[in-house]
Length: 265
Image 1 (cartoon, rainbow, N blue to C red):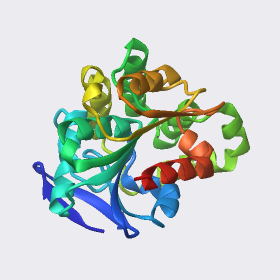
Image 2: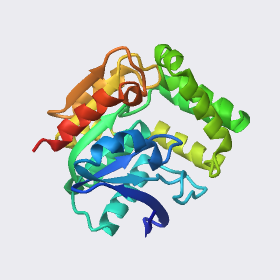
Image 3: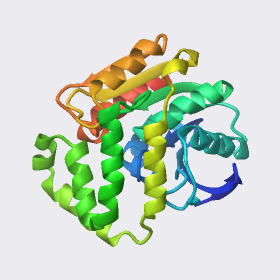
Image 4: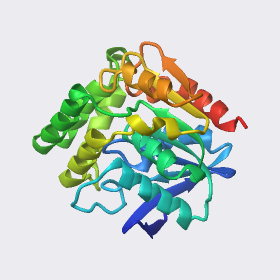
């Protein structure tokens, strides 16, 4: 799997499928491979580019402050290196924040936009959650921290129904041969809390789909409504009774909704 050098770092990515380019930006603490369950559908129509954000995976992990704007610069550098002038873009959680910045900072590069479980700016509650995650990860074992994340992003019903998957996720975290360094996680958390596109969302002029679970306790549905109200012409797709990880809880429904949107036009 290839790397490029851009924006001062080595950026790792994976390509899957053929067609018009689709860049996929994952969330806090997760590398591009976490798109796997979605790419099986997307790659039937698109050239999918799965990026490892700075601070995680096989991309460089500089021990310095990160911002979502800087990570958008990373994504733009990758597109330029691949000779891609314009792409569809989808981002989950922190990845959705990065995708907003990409559409604002590089409007000529973004064809259509999908924002999943994301926010324009954090309130005190969300900032405290990210700060708590950073502190907790420093003292918990990888498996215990994965369990903590699972309890935040999945609904109780999904956790109960997929307990074996939850336990496997915890075991995988404990056995991860390339764990994210603590400084990378803390820098990504800080990028999440400092993210603020609220006053610039009106600059996003491309077709935009926003998805959210109305039972999300991490990034509440009000954040998605705020994005929808401020991005002119955007669509809001609400997944009833589902949480932050509605894209996994209702995988097939989510994949079909996003694929249909991306194929329009």
